[in-house]
Length: 391
Image (cartoon, rainbow, N blue to C red; front, side, top):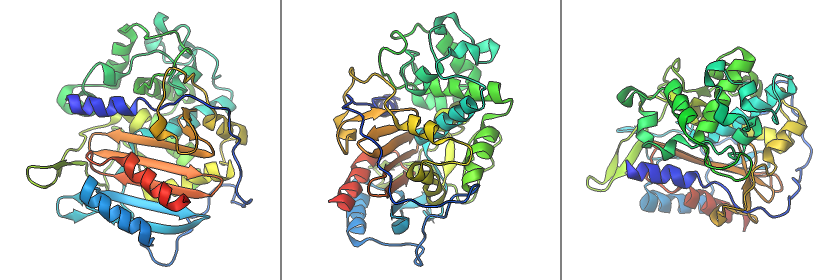
C-alpha cells in the first residue's frame, strides 16, 4: 500500500547534515547497582499528571487521534504518565501496557553488536561476509562493513523500497520470510559505494540480527533479552519473534477511520521477519530503565566507550538534511541512535504502531511516546512535549 510505504520511507530519511560534535554533558553523578538499574523514579500517584502536558495531549487526542501512553521523567522523577485511547476496541490503554516500539528496537540491536565486539567475536571495521552465516555471504557485499550496516551507509537497498510494508510485516498473508528477504537483497545491486552516503535501510539491521546469531551461537531474542534487557531489570520486555507469547497487556495496532469516526484494527500479523530492526515489545517503565544506559553511560554488559560510540555521528550525512528532527541543532545518525546537541532520540513505525523517545542528558529529561495507531504524528506530539518541558 502506497501510504504505508510513504510513511516508512519518511522514517527512512532519519538523518541531517552534521555540525561539529557536541560533547555529551553528564548530569549529577548517580550510583547504580552492578547488575540492575534503578527503578524509574516512580511517584506515589501511579498516573502523575503535568497540567500543561495534559492539556496539550488532550488536544492531540482530538487533533491527532492519539491512542497510547506517555511518560515524562525529569531528574529521576516521573512528572507525567498517562494512557490515552484504547488498547483494543472496548479495552482502554493502561500505563503498564506493552507496545511494539518498531525502529526504536535498532538501538538494542546496535548494543548487542557492540557487546559482541567487546567479546572479540567481531570487529566493526571488518566486512559483513566475515561474520554472516555462509549462506548469506555475497560478493556484492565484499566492501560492506558491520559499521556500515549500523550507520545505514551500506548501500544495500531497503526492503521498504522494493515492496509494500504490509508485505514484510504480514508474513503469514504474503509469505515473507527472513531467508526470502535476505536473498532478495543479495540479488539487488548496491545503491552507492559503501560508506559514501546515508540511506536508511531496515534490511541492514535484519542482517545484523543474523550476525548476532552466527557469532553468539544463540537466537537473536535470547541474546537481546539475556545480555541487554535482563541486566537492566526489563522484565516486561520481549522480542516479538516466532516464539513470542502474547500478553493480555499487549496493545493492538489500529488506525483512525474517518468514515466511522473511530480507531479500527490495523495490526501486524507477525514480526519475526523484522525482529532485529523493529521487533521489541516493551512498557514505559521498562524503557525508562534502559535510558539509564544513556544517563550514566553505563550498562553491566557494555563499556562506556561502546555507549559513547553509539551516540556519535557515524554516517556521512551531507546528502540528507532533516531539520525537523533537530531539536538542538542539526541531527545526525550514530549507531542505532539519532543525536541532536546533547539529545539522543529515535522514532519507530510499523503497521499499527508509532513511537518516539527523546532524552536530554543536560536536563536529565526523558520523553517517551508509545502509540498503537498509525494515524498520529508522533514527531508533532513528542516535539510539542519537549518544547513545553524546556521553555
